Image 1: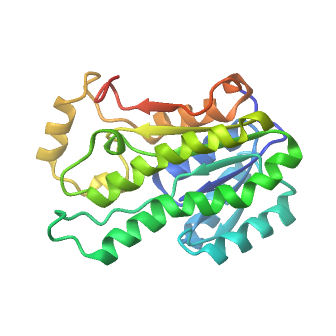
Image 2: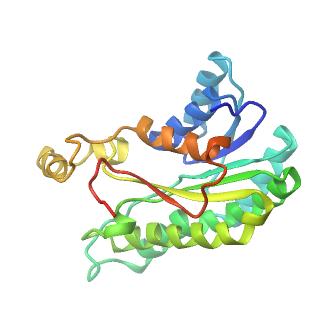
Length: 247
């Protein structure tokens, strides 16, 4: 699945799934713009990709800030010439039972997880139209499909990404641009590392494959959807959850 000559833009790339996606896309031949708030971690990632013979550039970015998104996409185009693959991965949690959830925590999660994807898609589509080729990949979640107690804001944002994915797929399909989503289940990342062993053990009991997923499992799905092999796949939600949710 060669991506040689392609340019990808990955948000939330400083750690976890985003970092692993950036490494995989670079390994497959794409030049990768990596974006997140932590510049130090981005620089380390760029150094790792470069040392492996790939090409990458770091762009410090808070995806929740529209003007920052506009400026960063403009700078990426100036440095790398185009953006053909967009991976909307940046996400946060602010968990709380809905009766106690603060409005600020609702707004922060929706802004970072969902509204930022709209910002970025809007800014990169012109580049994809010029190239007559594009791949938009939104990282949603199994909890956007089945809900989760204490995560009304997170589940709503991830469900919203699924609707956004399908709407964009219909809007740009005739221009050789696909838009898909990847819905990870329980993945071992920094975000899940703080959960109790009891919670993790109970989670594994719900997974037919009998293990938690890895960031590499998700990155493989992203790499497929970014490739020519997925040219007839659009508006689809690819579940990477070990069978935790089926159907």
